Length: 271
Image (tube, rainbow, N blue to C red; front, side, top):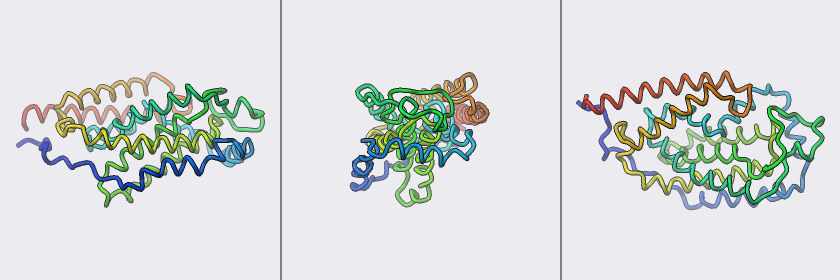
């Protein structure tokens, strides 16, 4: 008997309430005083100092949730456990890339380290000076979190609100390490949420066959996960403090890939 899920058994993309589509605009509008820098540098310094007592690896680890290779490692188990949820955030990724690259290309926004006396702030990792708007890590984290969140059945979403809290933690970490202004983070959150919502439109067009382990599409994604595993082992992603976490994620990737290969083999043999 085959253990692969029948194509017809794959659930349809859950509906996103219409009012949710207004949330990115609301966040963008409410945070206007922040991205207009009416409160800076005071607000940045207050948050940065408030976060200072927390150990640096906590913030660098949260920032890893906004790194593409890192998030591929974190979500690698979905390759076996819930391929549709993996596709959900991958469908949001193109929008996130466009929003992040466009903003950084057209907006000349100095980083906090370029405008604030470095002795007054906590800086973790590389000293950054430009292309501050929007926060790419925050945008990525919210695109992934919202992409997965809104792909869940409506009745189960409230139990997974922690996904959005983790994304918010990733955003806060960008202020904690001295890399971004609060306004950068809020705009990144708004654009990331919008990316996740737009990704749902793409997810509706993903063929159900792509959720199967024997499909060329999911196997291509598996190759991306392989690349992520290699990168996690060989490169320091953003911060040297993340190296132990990266090794742990590499193990997660390895286990996920072994499970995927096994499932692919069983599907092929019809076991």
